[in-house]
Amino acid sequence: MNSHENQNIVDLFVIGGGINGCGIARDAVGRGLSVELAEMNDLASATSSASTKLFHGGLRYLEYWEIRLVREALIERETLLRAMPHISWPMRFVLPYHKDMRFESDTPTSKVLNILMPWMKGRRPAWLIRFGLFMYDNLGGRKFLYGTTSLDLKGTPEGAPLQDRFEKAFEYSDCWIEDSRLVVLNARDAQARGARINVRTKVISAAQVDGMWQVTLEAQGGERRIVTARMIVNAGGPWVEDVIRNTMRINSTEGVRLVRGSHIVTRKLYDHNKCYFFQGEDGRIIFTIPYETDFTLIGTTDAEHVDVHEKPVCTPEEQDYLLEFASKYLKKTVTLKDIIFTYSGVRPLYNDGANSATAATRDYVLKLDQSAGAPILNIFGGKITTYRKLAESALEKIAPLFENTGPRWTAGVALPGGDFPVDGVDLLKAELKAKYPFLTDRWLDRLIKAYGSEAFDLLGDAKTARDLGQVFGSNLTECEVDWLVKHEFANTAEDIIWRRSKLGLRMTSKEIDALDSWMVDAAANLSEQHAV
Picture 1 (cartoon, rainbow, N blue to C red):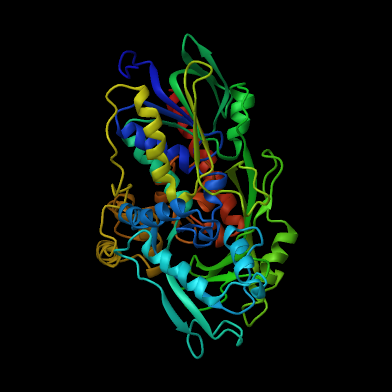
Picture 2 (cartoon, one colour):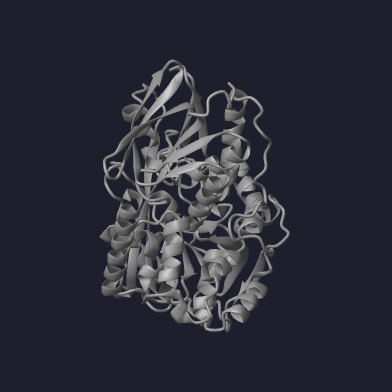
């Protein structure tokens, strides 16, 4: 195929504006392919904004012997840190140990130990955890992240929130990531390199005509248009199977297993900035993570989710499970009254026939289908940590179908606002404070962690806070909202307060309504200008 013989035909049409779709669009357009993407809602509106928000290797996946997946994710952590030091940063995880820690009964490791050490009755021995952490430290190599250490919990800040029965812990490194911002920045970079990004645009159908895909799109207002594409990438996430069968009407045996992961956000449960990795007597694990300065994030669950069209919510049963789980470790019982917010996402795991949701593979599976003539690449599964590697693997399958496709290029290449060193956050804050002395410390910190070096572009020539226009609440100004609408595909208040930021945790319903009204008026004024 020749990607330049007809400018009205795109090489790749990507269905889905989650992390996999936006990551593939960015990689592909950077290799010289013409790319268009459609997302039926907002970017990162489903799974990609509902993660536990970690770049991590997946310590517990070692028990399933998913060595390649863990190694790839561990190597990737620092590659990603270099590209986005504003929205990602290192965190330390404290893993308290006690003798009652158990495996899930169907992990390969537990089955072997039950044969070799039947007297343990499914319990995790300390030496096994330490061996797993040794592998975790060394499988992927480390430059920025500290290795595992042992902790005495008595009389230490890490031990203070925990019940007295916990005396020993292991501490290791992983990374935080602002998941929905990661998606938006990949989309922005793809657009800057020439891709067309459509939000709130649904793919109604995709049909094969003369060896090409005719993709029918419907925008939110009802307008329809057709895009001709040489190839489709189906990155529909939970909807990947639905797209295959109902949008493209292809018979396929490939499918996904929908697993719901739910989280609760509580008031701040402890003062230090480290996370806890808690292991349950049922073999499951949860994290408690310092969140947005004033809160604690607790998750996640693993529950089967039957209907992709049913919006996932954190059920009362899941809330009780997470509260009870955390309360078995913490001195102070966590109750329903402590919950500020809940969220839930559906992980589209490749259906490998596993017995339980927890045991289903977290590895991604890419299936190239040319049975209908024009090719389609279906994306199953994936982890947010390995999104860039998934995109590279996708391009390995795509590139042979096009002439003159460029080489790999994304490793360590900065996303918008991330063009500063991993250890350069404090210096960048100082520079921003010097230019805009009216910024409070909390405001300054939020802007740097959201926009990095682009905070200077956002604030422009402002000399005082009044220069930034109307304040909607929590230092969200008209100037920032305008930036998010013009540069980051935001259309509604929800886009801004839950996906471009987490200000929904702080703003009142009255403030949110005022923001929504402003955005409706701004959209109407823009439509009038276009009409003229």
